[in-house]
Length: 253
Image 1 (tube, rainbow, N blue to C red):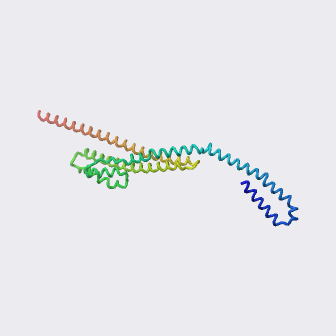
Image 2 (tube, rainbow, N blue to C red):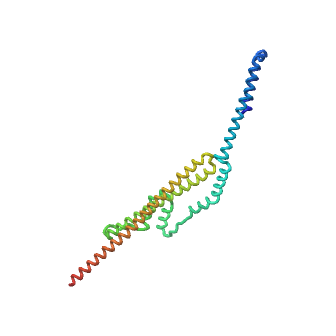
Image 3 (cartoon, rainbow, N blue to C red):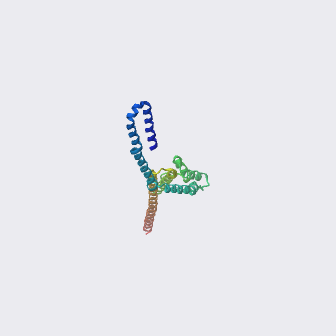
């Protein structure tokens, strides 16, 4: 930068010398000498000081604020993790677990393992074909009909929730891999932005886990309700039987 400034000053000086006659040069020579000495003296020294300060700032950034060596080590560590685990983890997540053999169960299993909410529309038909229709009113005690109905509803709801969760999980995995890739190429100073993005994805994942946990609690509540209903029905049947026995004994007397 200093050399460039001196070159520009010298060029201007040469042009002025060519345009002015020799007598004028004699009169203005002192002025030109003063200008040239100013360019090569105070200005040149200031430019040198500025360059030194900029070099010092750059060195501080590279060694303290954004240490280049440590950043390179972190990026190499991420590359090692990706090379060691990403392929294996992808295989685990895509591992086939289907095991049904008959036609209707296979169709149902294929639907709820698809991880695609677009297939939810056909799930109800597959479920009914596998587990049967709800009995009509009057062919079974009302309490039994109600228990079958609510348990079918809970089973369907839980399965649909699992399908949505599977699709959301795949989206979260893709987001995690993208953040992991960005961590290798992120510029110094932008790591906080990548970390914030990772934290946001983590919160989304926790929210999804809490939703599934809430559904597990609802399923447990339904099971407790089912047990209570059986006990209530058993108690009612026992009371009816006792009353019939008493009525029979009373009639025999």
